[in-house]
Amino acid sequence: MRKQLAMAAITTATLITATAGAAQAMRPDDGPGSGATDTTKLNVTFTIPRNFVCNVAVRIHTTGTETDAFSLDAVTITSATPNERLTLTNLKTGKTIHRITDGSNVTRIRPDGSQLQWGFGRNLYGGKGVRGILLENGVQRFRITDPNDPVNSTIHWVSRVGSQEQVCRTLGARPVKGKNLASAAASAQSASIRGLR
Figure 1 (tube, one colour):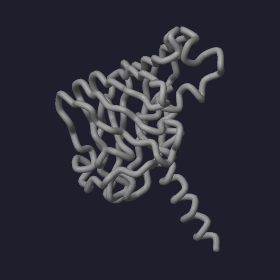
Figure 2: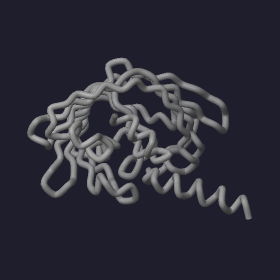
Figure 3: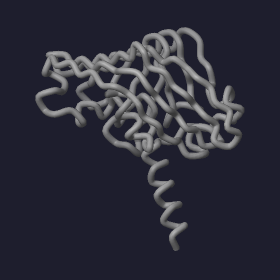
């Protein structure tokens, strides 16, 4: 769910921070507070436009499964992707890399609507509050402000322990200050509308 939402949002890509919208995307009886578990097969391809995380457009293809567990206290979502595989491609040069992102996330929904998240293992991050695309391997703690606002939702790092790979550089590109991918979708739509004129 987290990654599916991120991808749907990547044409909104606040890449992997989209657990933020998980509560809204679920049926009322399946969301936080239900104690439900949801497993989703992943097989999604999306493109992040140029200058939204890297100075070139990047295509990401993801496969595997994701399991989300919703707590009975209505404030905790646990997501795990034990067999997720990513293929990332620099669309300017064609350079392609493969990565495993088999980490997990625990999300606490706070009274003010913001979210506190812990990432464990290998997780991919990008979007507003992140420079480029980061593959983190270790323990990450961050909060997301305005998680239900696709324009202003922002990652604020609290702590990070472990290793980081700047995926833009690995792809031969330059990382840029992340933008919210809802803005990316609007920009792409605007560009296609300009092209029709």
